[in-house]
Image (tube, rainbow, N blue to C red; front, side):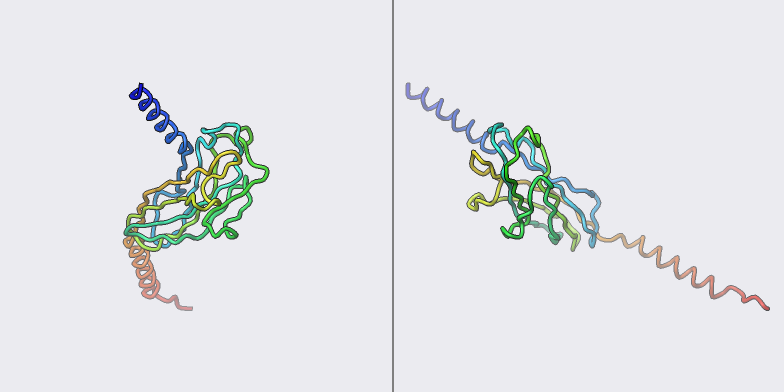
Length: 190
């Protein structure tokens, strides 16, 4: 009897742990070719937000961003989805939204946008962009009315390229040739 009880308990724990992380967050950049000095956006989407309890209501969300790697990014700000009121500054988070009354699956569906993040590429190299929530702070994660907060955790690998030098050199050389052609042109006599 004890082995059967242990097996059932193990199965329950495994199923409960997979259900607690049912929502999936994805990061979608608007530009695959990022160069130093350019600004670009990354859309943050949540999928299967109501997988644990389809009758629950989503009241809000909150998360911070982090980047690491050989390249560098500067966080320029966020635009919160129109489904939520922007409370990012008040909560000192990179992106946070609040909705009251909350949203249910019938109103917004199971996949929707949370925010759009804006970055500027500072240096060339590989960059790992991460959005994450600290569930010790009740203002972070996906905040539901009837269940505990769900973690927001997603990452994206980006390649930031240097500004193409040959293009700049060709423009400069074309300008020099044009100046040379203008200065050698004979002046028409009146």
